[in-house]
Image (cartoon, rainbow over all chains, first blue to last red; front, side):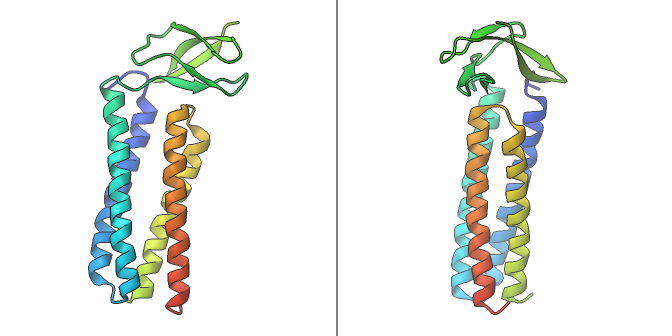
Length: 117
Length: 60
């Protein structure tokens, strides 16, 4: 399990299962409905759920392969603070917008951060 | 199951997904992931709106 992403990976995997279930259900519904407009819509829905599955699956893969930046919203100015793709607890980064510094922490298997200046 | 019952069943799924993503939007701290679930939530919301309209059209 990739460290620093315990809860996020759990959530994303649950999302993935939900979307896979929806895809299966909508394909079945597309076969069963008689109304042509509804049939077309369920085909469109199944296509949309396929897209969701690909999007979520790609993010999970990026996290596991460490090609996903560890980033947060700056609590001071709202900009994105970025610790990079394979950071370690204790790494320090500075918000490029407001200049405040933050240190990467980890709590219960999930990355977090704290302000240090 | 009639078409209306199927549409209502689908609406339930879409509403559950929308609610799930809405909660995650507020819990996640990563800007990229927040944008991802926001996009998913909006999509589920659109689907729900279409299904409500279809249910009305079918007389449900």
